[in-house]
Length: 464
Ligand code: FAD
Image 1 (cartoon, protein in one colour):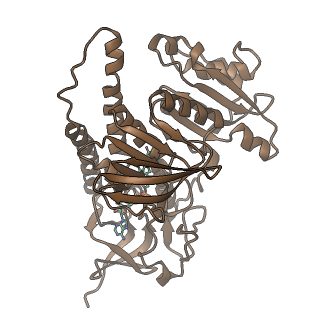
Image 2: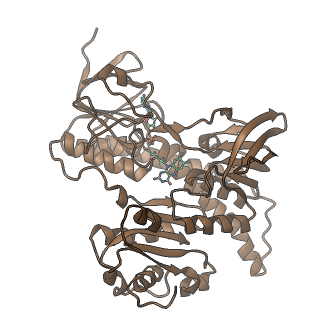
Image 3: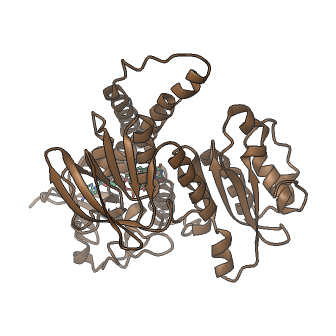
């Protein structure tokens, strides 16, 4: 047997967790190997964030034909070719995946193509034959679409989010199971391109983790756009035939309704990729699939770290990347920031209207015994929103009664995913509402909504 190749750090998985950790380790002088079985960039760049946002942009442009028609412009849609929309999404993914390859090269990181399995706390076996020795190992193997019992993916009629992103041809009618971020974004894309969409969520509202009023605003907006939304409804049976699928839905009262479509998208969550990577060999016992990890990503096995979708923090690309930075600093003996504060993680949903938030809702704060106020400014009173016809939605700041600290923020409306960061910065810097209320915001902007919500929190505004 040949002796193993040796590195300071071996990373399994090259998603936004793994590749960011690799660069951080390399920049701290470590020799790094990154092991990837598929394309560099992981789910985020190849099958998640990036292609979905490309499709959303195209969907939004396609939808704007209605606004153009209102100007008297007749848009001829006869040349519409979804294959080109798809191709643009793949081009975006390819560009960024190549960007990761460049980053690896520039930072002297060794990329190893193959399936990595942990052999011991100090080595990883690639494709069963190539042994990589390492002073530290980072597990960044991410996650995959979760299957719903009774609704197994077949790639044609029962689709995962990955299958849906890879469609070259649009269905005429689709049922989407799951009203979380992925289900909502895919529903929006399909609806914008004229597909009949039926969006089913088992819990009482879409985006169950978001502010209840934001979720209701989104539901109303989706219904107005022609999406059939079924809250508090479960899919209980599936039959397939040559024509497509037939799904039996059951509502909260137990009433069953059959519904047929060309295909079904199951977007009910993600399963961490922790089942076949050799965790048992190093004494790590996953908890519901997730790897228990400490403040810096350390696992039960010294020298082995876990980051990103394999740990039970929010399954988001920016969380994975930050966890990669934290683990890398710890490995390099320069520990800085610890585990991310869960109340300071922005969440963003990129449909129209966009939804973005962080921290506590008023309900959650009160349930935790925190006295608070929610100050809400509706975009219908913002000059920019009226001028651009984007009046749906609001800015809501959850803050203490004195206005001296922000507990959370919830925005639904145009550009919400960009706007949220001003409030998050204010929270992180422990700024009072006066700091936001007194800062000059350009007019007319959607950002003025943030200033107005802060003023309302100080009892200075005019909108309830
Ligand atoms: P991943 O990105 O999953 O990467 C893991 C990598 O490990 C993969 O490349 C995989 O091939 C590789 N791997 C796994 N096992 C092995 C092995 N044994 N050997 C070698 N390689 C292995 N998040 C956001 O923040 N914003 C969004 O807008 C957003 N949109 C999304 C849209 C969709 C449709 C989906 C599915 C997800 C979206 N996400 C979004 C979530 C985001 O993609 C994930 O949270 C993020 O990719 C997790 O990063 P990661 O590094 O932990 O793992």
